[in-house]
Image (cartoon, rainbow, N blue to C red; front, side, top):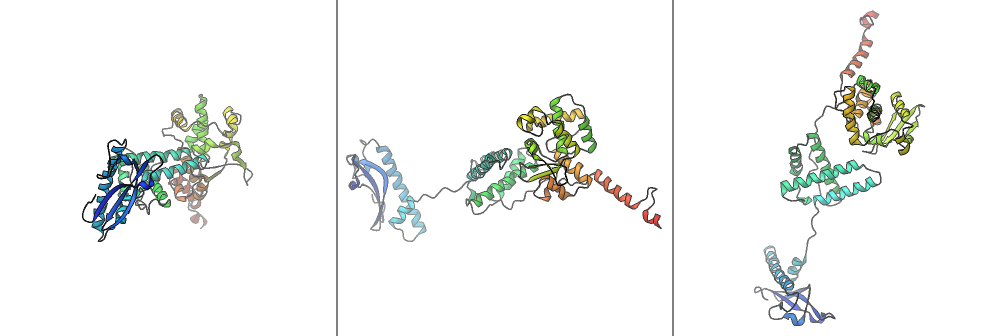
Length: 417
């Protein structure tokens, strides 16, 4: 069929390629300015079911509807391709029309594909003990929140990586805040999204991350921790409920070692060793980061370990201490606070904060040493705990007082004169 003075499109049977069952392949021929090119339609028809004059299959063909629909669609798309090429080029050939029609660009990488690569890789690490299930769940939660944001903002469940702009990060952050998620948690979600985008860049899915320069800023929250008198009060409290008593002991152990829940949960007797000073130490790699946390065991921590050496759970599971699941542990801590009359929200993190603040920094342990014991990779993480407390001020001023004044209150310099 001649479309115009230059372009002609013909659907014809190449009978020389007839198959053994009698079916003949349908070819498409493009003629432009006397020059032609062609390609196979991928469809076949019996010769007697083909109308040479119209270039369509007749009704007797069982596949007539599908074949004729293809022919109509292909002719229209070839014409569209020809017209587009004419707008872009001064000279158009039959080969250009054929190639333009047949070329199907690869689908562009999307954000959800980037999440799949990122999360699948981390899941492999978890399976090899190189990452935690909790972190993987956090990545999966982030993916779900990004999908929800895409549906609300862009009316779709995915987006091409190359169309993401800087404003995507700030828009997602605002969306999280509107879901009643606090500032720091929202920022952490955006920070992790930046990691996913960086992974996409490293995988060659996109040239650069549009949100790379988005700065994540956090509020410095007040972190609860126990004062020394509260720790002693808790440790000496007579508790009838055995489960609560066990939780109390594990919590106090964490106060004197700085271990987070995941780490103390995984401790085994083999993690105890004799240090260079001849005393007992405990060591374990942090589940969160894989960095080593090695801490000398103070007397209270040693008492607690000794107390549970013959505990059935510890013997059967080869555990150092009888630790509940995280959810149950936090639930018991609320009861423990009530029993001990402590008006603070005890969580699995407050014991770690207590070790950093009350046990070490308030007693002038250098922050570099504290950072090493906590297993921090960056000193800035440890500095979060290095607040100036009233107890710290009191201790430092007492040292200063003793340096400057005699017992009778006179200046030492004046007394020496």
